[in-house]
Length: 105
Image: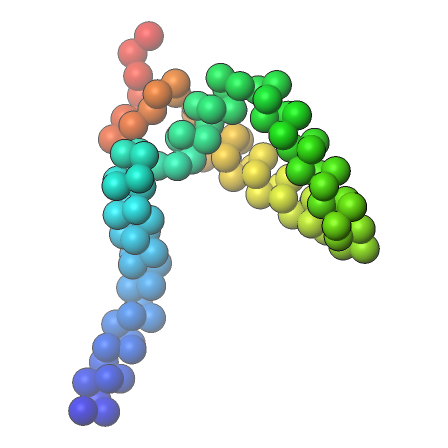
């Protein structure tokens, strides 16, 4: 029994990255129908002013609630949001689906 548990544990450690990707794919295929990064990119490009106002508002609220940690919270949020959803990765294609590599113009 112990060796079975060890084998399962080793398999989980070995395939951890694949399991997380599979879990994420399972979630977005049922909620939204395509990767959430693509959905966020589309909404950002459709409603840029609204997103900017919202980000400033969130920053102001967090500034009042967590003043002593505000610099680190805003820095982490800004780097993660901007880098992860807007600039890193593939080029933005309006209405991009998970299986799209490029869209004809």
